[in-house]
Amino acid sequence: MIIALKNQVRKEEQEHLIHWLESYGVRTHISEGEFQTIIGLIGDTTRIDTDLISGLDIVESVTRISEPFKKANRKFHPDDTVVRVTDQVAFGGGNFQLIAGPCSVESEEQVSVIARAVQQSGAGVLRGGAFKPRTSPYDFQGLHEEGIRILLEAKQRTGMPIITEIMDIGHLPLFEEVDIIQVGARNMQNFELLKELGRLHKPVLLKRGLANTIKELLMSAEYIMAGGNEQVILCERGIRTYETYTRNTLDLSAVAVLHELSHLPVVVDPSHATGAARYVRPMSLAAAACGADGIMIEVHNDPQHALCDGPQSLTPEQFAEVAAAVRRVREVIQ
Image (cartoon, rainbow, N blue to C red):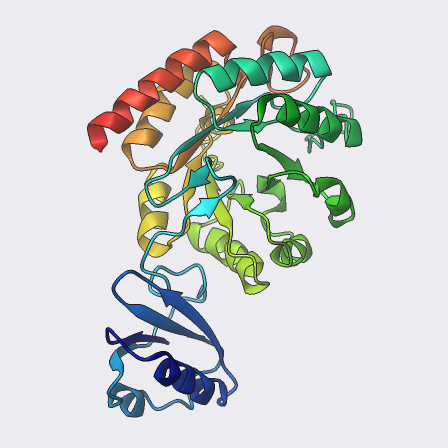
């Protein structure tokens, strides 16, 4: 249920209404926009008389909603959420960021070279995998703690915030200085992990699963937000279809749908979606054109010898060209 209050409602009147609503055993979620305050009710609202609430002087309207995702729902929070990573880096509400870096952290020199290059080309966040979920147990699994240490050193040298993927709840202590925690496609429905991330006060980038619906993605975001952490960034990274010419099928319609259904920022990952470096540029431009709040691109200084996902990685020079083209597209649509 959503209750929209009239303008200029006194604070004590609002608090009295909230106290009365919570006496029915529901939780309240307050969203204070520029022109209106919204009270979202979470829980069993069947015992609450909507006609009685509608008749209150301070209430503009009352609406029952059927979607199971409440906190992630735009009806609960009409204004775009801005996930602020640093004073200079934010996602959503008109803020756009390029996230770039290697699929996996391989060495200090590799990360240092790539970090400087992508920063000069306009990337705001450095990505790099310390823990790598691989289909084969014989493939490179990442440098683990050493990988995070290397990323943190790059962060110290460049000032760029970093994002890296978490694989297990037990690894959380290693992520204390990581700016954005990434939940990969394979862990999108790892609900115990999502609950733990909900207890943090740190941005979380949540990737859509290989074969998950938009509703399921939003319900996973709800797990994090229900725990109290509302700094969630959604990521469309392609879904598995019957098409084989690309690694996955990039569902750019999801960007528009997610923006309609939810107030959370949406990032697009064309590298994992297509699996081929030659498709990253056109898909990046399309992502910018359809309103994505950010683009995540894999960059490697020597893709042919990369330990992970070399075929989909751009060189620093290619990334510079794509970044410039994305800026031009965004200038046009704005």
